[in-house]
Length: 364
Ligand code: ACO
Image: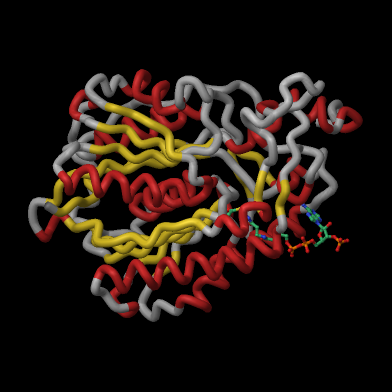
């Protein structure tokens, strides 16, 4: 049996936060952020991660022409779950009303969507489950330390989802191959130490005062190497050649990393998706969100051969090669959406600004 992507959907909150907005309370500038990362703006989520994941998931299910009760498994890639007990996927299963689905979280940080998609392929092709929903969703702005300009300017919130089903004929496309893995020798270059059951709960403000270990330049170099290698391995496993690849969807961490990947990987005929300028780094959500954007703006027209690749904390990494089906119009739609928010993007994190930079709290 073969598997393929039959539905897709995304959910980005309306609350836009520009670089200039951040510069009102962080010692940074639009020029610095754009030059180093390519990011112009990002979205801040005013609800829980599972609410974004639910909207993206329901849009993908409708797009595939399915009903929530048709779904057998919900795999939620996230490193920012609403709760540890139960999983965020439990909340999503409940809110989506996927009453017949098993559901669980995958935490592989920014490479989570690739890990989850590989599992969906295995479930469908083994016959264990028929219809799988794979969601990458992050409320990563919740996890930021707003007094750390090295990390606070990089991220944003979003969710993206796909449905994976059996591929019945060539026109349906096929998920060909993966090369996913982990370089835990680099575990300590990107980490939020002791945030979890290793945390001393009784240290005052332990959860508020999270500290990111973030070796930007080392992540940059390791990230390019890992994404290039895993992409090449996935292409080789699929039996394709580099010339066959039409679209490259890299993790949208930073446009300079993506350009470095392009120079290293050298796919002669591929268009590379670059949407990070409007969302920042949305971790596990960045690939499915870019995928949906590219369908919506006409960059993806159907039948393309894709390589997707990501790197994340761990360091986790992954690459996949797949062929899209010829249908890129949704079979159905849903009007489900996030509840409206009356304030500005900055209002969403007002409490955090008051905590981290009280001297700036009244300025905006
Ligand atoms: N605004 C203004 N100045 C800043 C900011 C900021 N937000 N952040 C850092 N700086 C300053 C630093 O203090 C430093 O100043 P100094 O020279 O006086 O000491 C200067 O800018 C240069 O800092 P570098 O860290 O050397 O800047 P670099 O060019 O490496 O860019 C960046 C930093 C953007 C983080 C880069 O290293 C990078 O893209 N790394 C990859 C990490 C990444 O994007 N990860 C994504 C998340 S992880 C993942 O997805 C796997």
